[in-house]
Amino acid sequence: MSSTVLLSFVLGYFLILLIVAYFTSRKSNNESFFIGNRNSNWMLVAFGMIGTSLSGVTFVSVPGGVLGNGFAYFQLAVGYLIGYIVIAFVLLPLYYRLNLTSIYNYFSTRMGFKSYKTGASFFILSRTLGATARLYLVVNILQTVILSSMGVPFWVTTLIILLMILLYTFKGGVKTIVWTDTLQTLCMLLGLIVCVVFILNYLNLDFSSAMKMMSEKGYSKTWYTEPNSRFYFLKQILAGAFITITMTGMDQEMMQKNISVKTLKGSQKNMISLAIVMLGVILLFLILGGLLYLFAESHGASVHDIVENGKTISAFAIGDKNVGKDNLFPAMALDYMPPAFTVVFVIALISALFPSADGAITALTSSFCIDILGIQRSEKSEAEKKKIRQIVHLSFSLVFLIAVLVFKWINEASMIDMILKIATYTYGPLLGLFAFGILTKRKVIDYAVPFICIFAPIASYLIDINQELIFGQYQIGTELIVLNGLITFILLFGFSKSQHAHE
Image (cartoon, rainbow, N blue to C red; front, side):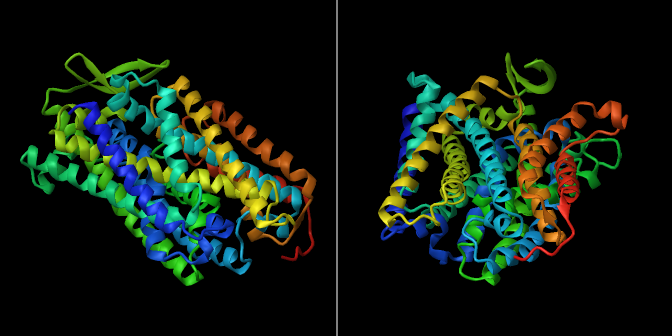
C-alpha cells in the first residue's frame, strides 16, 4: 500500500478527532481544561485510561519482548492489579477529601511549600521523559512507514504530530481528552483483536493449538521462580504494584482524569474496572507477541543475536533483514499482511500514540500552571490565566519536540525498558513523599526535602551499577523503584520531628 494512501487514512482519523474536540470544547474554561469541570463520566474515563496506560510502547514493545522474556510481563500486570486497588481505596479518598485539582497540593498542606514544589517538579520531569520516550517510538515507526518515502525529515514528522495534538487539546484540555481517549482506545483494541484473529486464521490454528505451539518454543513462559533472576515473580509483582501506585496514583496526568469524575464512588468504579480490563488486555498483547513470532517463522524467519549500541540482543532475520524486538509488529503488519491489515495497524498505532501524548502535555500544562506558577492563587483575571495556560501548553509542545529528537539520537533498542528505568529513578521520590505523608504523622524539615529527593535517585543509581558487588548473583530489576522510595522515606524520617502535622 502506498504511503499516500496510508497518510490519507491518518489524516481522516485526525479529522474525526478534531470534530470530537469541537463539540466537547465548546464553552470551555480553565476549570474545563484542568479538571473537566469535575463532571466526567466514570465509564468513559475508565475506558479511555486503558489507552493512556498502555501507549504505543506497549503496542509494539510488549509483543516484541516475548522473544527471550516470554510472558514475564504478565507478572508485572498482576502487580498492576494490586496497585490499582491501593489507588482506589487509599489515594483517591485522600484526593477527594482535600478537593484537589493538582494532587501535589497535598504536599503543601501536609509537609510544606518546598515539599510541594519538589513533588510537582519530579512529576514534570518524570512525565516529560516518559511521555516523550513513548512518543519517539511511535513517531519513528510512522516516519519509517509513511513519511520517509515522501522525503519528509524526522523532525518535521514529529512537529506535525505535535501540532495535530495541539489542535484538539488546546482549548478543551481534560474535558476533550476524556472523549478522544475513549475513541482512540476503542480503535487500538479493535486493531489488536483483528490482528490476533488474522494470524490465527492464517496459521490455521485455534486458540489452544496456538498456545501449545508458543509453549513448546518457550514464548509463553509466564512465571519465573528463580530468586536471582530479574524476572523472579515476587519481585515483578511487587514492582508492578509500586509502579502502578506511582505512575498512576501519584501521577497528575492519570489522576487528573480520575478526579474529574463527579464522585469518589464513581472514580473508584473507574479504577477497579480499569484494573480488571488491563489485566486481560496485557495478556492479549502477550498472546499477540507469541503469534507474531509464529507468523514470522512461517515466513522463514530465524532467531540470532546482533550487537546494537554496544548491547547483544536477540533479533529475527527475514531474508537479509534484521528485525529488532520493537520492530517485529510493524515489520509483520506492513510487509507480510494484506493491505487492509496495514491500515488497521497504522490506525491502531496512532490510536495508541495520541492518548499517551495528548494527556501528558495537558497534565504537564496543568501542573506547571497550578503548582509552579501558582495560577489558582493568582489574582489575575480569567482571560489572563487562560493566556498563561496557552503559552505554557505551547512551551511543553516545544519541549516534547526537542526531547523526541534527543531520543532519536540515543536510538535505544527497547523503549519499554528505558521507560521503566526512567520511572524507577524519577517516580521513586514521589513514592517516598506520599508514603511518608500518609503513613506517618511526623513533621518533615521542609527545606531538606529537595536535597533528599535529589539524593535518593543518585544513591539508587550507584546501587544499581554496583549491584553485583553488593548483592552478588541477585539482580535488581524494576523493584529499584521500591528501593528508591525507601531511601527517600528513611531520609525524610531522619529529617523530621515527632509532632502531629495537621492537614
